[in-house]
Length: 298
Image (cartoon, rainbow, N blue to C red):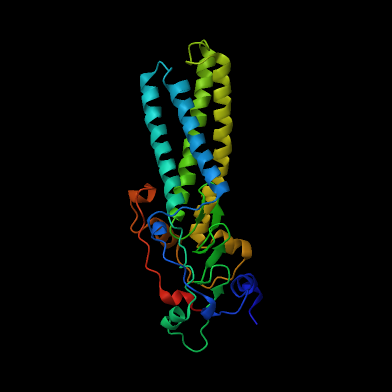
C-alpha cells in the first residue's frame, strides 16, 4: 500500500498494469523533430492575441506618444527602450512556444526498452496509459499536448505550450519582459496625459483628441491588466524554481523524493551555468543534461 502522499501519482500512473506487449512505438515523424508546435485552437488564438496586443502597444507608443513629441531625446530614449523590451518579449514568447518542453518518448513502454533498463528485483517502472510511455519521476501527462512532460509546471494557452524542463527559462523571461514593457507603457501614458493637459490636445498627437484619448485609455487598461497578471506569474515561477517544486507538485502536495538543492543551484539548472548575461537572453538556450535512462525506475 502506497503512502497517502503518493495517492495522486498512483491514480495517474497506475490506471492500468504495465503491459509492454500492447505498446507499439508510433511511426517516426521527422517533422516534429525540427519544430515543436501544438495544434490547439485555443492556444493558437491566445498566442495570436498576445502578439496583436504587443503590436497595438507598439503602435500607440510610437505614433500617438513618441513621434508627435517635441522632445527628440525623450522620444529616442523611450523608443529604443520600448522596442528592445518588445523584441525580447516576443522572442521569449516564440521560444517558449516552439521549444519542446521536455516530452517523454511516446510509446516507449515496450518490452525491448524495459529490458534495456536492466531492472533489479523490486524495482518498478510506471506506464502512462494515455500515451503508452514509461514515465520518469516528476513527469506528468498533459491532455492538451497529449504527451508526458518532464517537470511539467502547467500548460499555458498564452504560449500554446506546456511549461516544463526545457522551456521554463523562456516562459519566465516572457512574463518578465511583458511586465516591464507594460510598466514602461503605463509610465509613458501618464506623462503623455500630463503633457496633453498642459498643452493643446490638437498638438500633442497626430490623431484627433477623442481618438487619442480612446487609444491611450485602451493602452492603459491593457498595460495595467498584463502588468498585474505577468508580474504575479513571474513571481510564482521564480518561487517555484527556487523551491524546486513545480505548480502541479504544489497543487497535488506530492511528497518530495528528489535531492534538495540550494536556490542558486536551482536557478542555474533552469537558466544555465555559469551565471551570465545569457540568463536574460531568450535566444540563448541553456545546456540541459542528458536524460538518465534509470530516471524511469522507482
